[in-house]
Length: 304
Length: 263
Ligand SMILES: Nc1ncnc2c1ncn2[C@@H]1O[C@H](COP(=O)(O)OP(=O)(O)O)[C@@H](O)[C@H]1O
Ligand SMILES: [Mg+2]
Image (cartoon, rainbow over all chains, first blue to last red; front, side):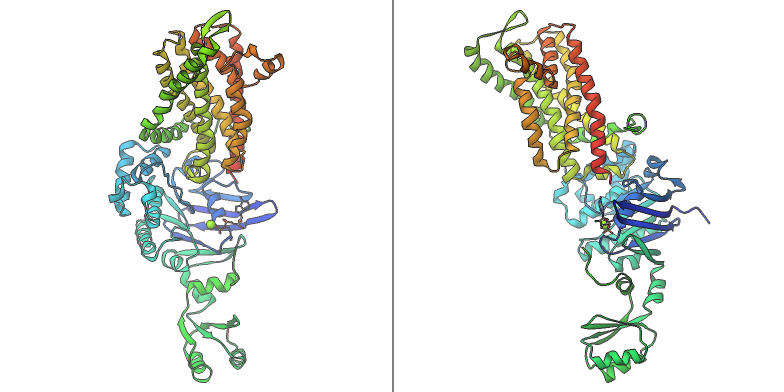
C-alpha cells in the first residue's frame, strides 16, 4: 500500500479548558476523497486549520505526504491547495490578478502562472470575467475563483472547508461537477461539509465528528446500511397506539414527538401494516440517506 | 522571540511587498497626488501666510527663511504618515476585513514574512512619497544638494521605524476605531512638538527632554541636517535612535501579530 497522504494520530486542539478537537485519528489515502462531517462547532475548521499549519496542535501528531508538519511546514504547504471557509479573495485585485498574485506566493514563474491561471479560469467557467472586480462576482463565481486559486500550485492535496455553503443549487451542482472531475484525475481531496447530500455524492470515505471527537467512520453507503438501513418510514402526527404497536414489533424507531422515524426497514411489510391499520395519510416509506445517519448520531438539537 | 529572526523569514517576504506594489500601481495617479500637492499647500499656508508673522528663524547659528526651516519637517511628517497609516489602518483592513493574511497563511508564506513584507512595503511608500515631495520642494530652492539626497535612504529607515510601531498597534487594537488613540496620544503630539514647526529650543527644558523620546524628533533632526547640508557628529545619536527603535518594535510587532492571528 502506498503511504497515506494525511495521517493524524490523536490530533487535539484545546482553547483553555475547551476541547475544540479532542484526539481524532484518521488517514487519507492517495486519490481518495475524504469527508469531515459534523454539525456547526464540531471542530471541522479547527482540524483543517491544523492540517495546513495555521493553528498549532495542542497534542497529537500530524503527517502530510509522510512529513511531520511541525518540521517541514513550508515544504508541505507548497503542495497543498486550501479553500478556506470565509471568502478571502483579494478585493483590491481583479479576477485574473488574484490568481497571478497568489501564484507568486508559491514562487510559480510568471509565464507558467499566467498559463495555469487562464486554464483554471476556463475550467471554472470564469474566462469571461478575468478583468472583473471581485465585488462584481456572484457568490458562486467567488467560490469557483477560490477553488481555481487553490489549484494554482497543482496541489497533491486539496483541502475544502464547506465549499458550497451559501450557494444556490445551480452553483452547488456546478462546483460538485468540477470536484468530481478533479477526483477522476486522481487528486486527493479533504472536504468538510454539513450538506450530507454533497458528502454522499463526493466522498469515498468519511468521518462524522461532534464535540471534537470522531463518532463514526466509513464509506457513505456502508454507514447508511449500518446505522439506518436501506429504507426508513416517517410518520407524521403519530398516535399512542401506533407507538405501542411499534414497541411490540421491536421496531427501531426514534420518537420526535410530532413525528416518528422508523429505521432499518428492509422490506415493506411493516410499512404496509402501518399504513393499513394506523395511518391513512402521513406515513411515508423512503430511501434512507446519510442525513438520517447524521441526525441519528449527532442528535437533533440546534447548534450555536 | 524564539527564532523569529533567522529561520522564519526568507526572501519570500518580497512576495507580500510585491502584492502591495501591484495594488499601488493600479492607483498610482491617486497615490502620487498627495505627496506632490501637500507640500504646496503647506508652503503656501505656513510659508507664505506665516512667514510674514514669523519672519526668519534662528537655527544653529544660521538665519533661515521659515519655509527653509519647515521643508525638512514636511518631509519627515510625510515619511511618518505614509508608513504609520499603511501598517495601521491599511494593514488592519487587509488583516481583519479582507482576510488577506489568512489567505497568505495557506501558502508557503510564514506569518513573519507577511509582517516583514507589510513593513517593508510601508517603508517603500515613505520612500516614494519623500522622493516626490523632495522633487517639488527642490523647485523652491529650499534644499541643499547633494547632501539632501541622503533624505532618500533616511526615508526608508524612518519609514521602517514608523511602520514597525504602526504594525505593533495593529496587533494590539481591538477594532479599527481604536487607532484614534495612538494617533491622538502619539502621532499628533509628535507632529507638533518634534522640532517640526518651531525649533525645540523654544520649548521649556523639560519639554525638550521629553521631545528626545519621540522618534519624529530624530527623523526631523536628520532630515534638516541633510536638506540644510549641516551634518554634525551628534546626529549619529539620532541615527542610532531610529535603528534601535526599529529593531525593538519590529520583533514586538511580529510577536503581537502572532498572538493575534495564530490561534
Ligand atoms: N480561537 C478560538 N478560541 C476559542 N474557541 C474557538 C476558537 N476557534 C474555534 N473555537 C471553538 O471551537 C469549536 C469548533 O470550531 P470550528 O472548528 O470552527 O467548528 P466547525 O468548523 O465544525 O463549525 C467551536 O465551539 C468554536 O467556538
Ligand atoms: Mg467551520
